[in-house]
Structures are given as structure tokens and as C-alpha cells.
Image (tube, rainbow, N blue to C red; front, side, top):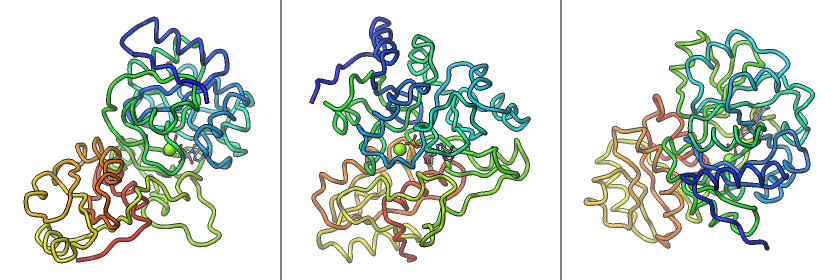
Length: 339
Ligand code: AMP
Ligand code: MG
């Protein structure tokens, strides 16, 4: 165990310290607008291997490379198709990751042996400052222990990885709260592999046809190969068994109140007044962005309820709601009950 240095994104000398650690091959938890990332030099295979060890991440799950200038993209991939230029002009910097054929400089650890690489230009000023200051593209998956909800505060990062990483740069809570949208442009038509803050509707408005990968909403069949390896793992799992209840509000409240033994609720603000079980609220019923912002912290807080089953309300599946639903069904191991 080594001590994890706590740095503040509001102090320029701390940002420089984070960049120095990264240049020396170390690991730093950094804030982004989506979730906290666990960063390492993306061009250094040994540094990237340390990310997998610290997180307990399966070796076949590739990393996203973060840049602070669109020009860097051209050094990391073999070709930049017109679709990538369109998306970059509309949504970069921002919560969108594009997958493209990888250049030779990308070590195998980053792409987990695939011939493509995932690239994102984050909008968070502290993320941009660390990338710029380090002079490197930074590979950074979510800074959680594999299988746990992604971290949206520096405290979450320390809880999971304290003593296993060199430093964490505290930039306050993350805005979006869910990981980036992942779209592959290495297939024709482009395919949405993971929904996030940039929505399927926005991608289709920009590019025309965009296929929704079936793994976004459904479990993989036995033996089926995941287009995005991260989607095949049970994810975001709280200790309790989570069951999504899909139906109107009244039916949800009645069902939960009739099944109170050892039960808790993951509900929307206002529902807790009518539920007779311990509750964690997650945003408002009509507000997908607030649900996204609060979901991972809510999933972590469920562990404090000390219940064995949590009944969750079913998010709306449009816009950012699709991303909320995608994370929640994984937390629920795909258990959805129609009311
Ligand atoms: P994380 O950064 O922890 O949110 O995980 C990164 C996500 O991007 C995972 O779901 C990966 O499977 C996905 N990903 C990264 N690189 C690729 C790639 N080259 N092809 C397909 N999916 C990728
Ligand atoms: Mg992750």
C-alpha cells in the first residue's frame, strides 16, 4: 500500500504535480464531465497495464484515450472519416467517445488487442489542463474498482482505489454523472455501443443512420461476442439485488408497499413520502439529466440501506434516459418486472 496523494484541481501547482506523475508512468484519478477517470500515459503500455491491475479490470476490456486538442486525434488513428469530423465539430469537447482504426503508436494494453482505439476530447477544464500540461494522450477508464458504480466524486475514487494509485485530483462532483456515449465509426453504418450524454437522437440527426447495438438493452446470449467488451460484464452492482419495476407511479408505490420485507427503494424525488421502506432518491421523474447526475452516487448509497432487495423505478428510455436505463438494467442484472 502506498499513500494516494490528494490534489486539488483549483491549484495550478497541483495540476502540474498530476501531470508530472503521469509523465513518470504513474496513475492519477482525474475529474471529467462524465465520471472520474483513472489516467495513465496512453503511449506507455506498462503504465496502462497498471490501470488494469489497480482496478481489477479484465484484460480484454479496452481503454478510452483522452485528448485536449482535435489535432491529437490524427496521431492516434489511421483515418479520420467525414463522420468523425462532423461529430467532433458538434460534440467535442464533450461526453462522446469515437472508435476508429488505431495507429501503430497505440500499445496493445490500451485497445486490448483490437485493431481500433476509442478517443474522447473531454470538456472538463481540469481534465484538459492535465492532458495539456502532461503533453500526452491519457488512457483513462472510470476510476472505480471493476464492477462497482463509476465514481462521480474524488471521495468515490479514494474509497475504491485509495492506496492503489499515486494521486487523485479533486475537481468536485461530475456534471453528467454517467460515462461517455461510445459510437464506433469503424463499422458502416456507425453503431452506438454505449449510450451517454450525447444521445442516439443527436447522433442520428448528425449522421443519418446509426444502429443501436443490441447489447445496450439486452444481455448477450451465451457465447455471443460483445462489440464493446465493457458491455458484457455485470456492472454497477450494489450489494442488494436490484429489481426494476416497469409501470405507472401508482402501481410502483403499491407494489413496493406490498413487498416491504427486507426491501428498499430507488425512487424519484417525492416518491419517498409515499413509500414505507428505506429509500434512496435519484432525480425527478421527468428529469433524465438529474437521474444521470445522481445515479451512481445513489447506487453506492443503496449499500447503506442494509436491505436485500431494492425496487427501482424504470427510467424513460428517450434521450439521456436511454443511458440511465442502460446502466440501471446492468445494476439489476437485467431483472425487469412489468407492472
Ligand atoms: P470505461 O472507460 O470504464 O467507461 O470503459 C470504456 C468503454 O469503452 C468500455 O465499455 C469498452 O469496452 C469501450 N471501448 C474502449 N475501446 C473500445 C474499442 N476499441 N472497441 C469497442 N469498445 C471499446
Ligand atoms: Mg468503467
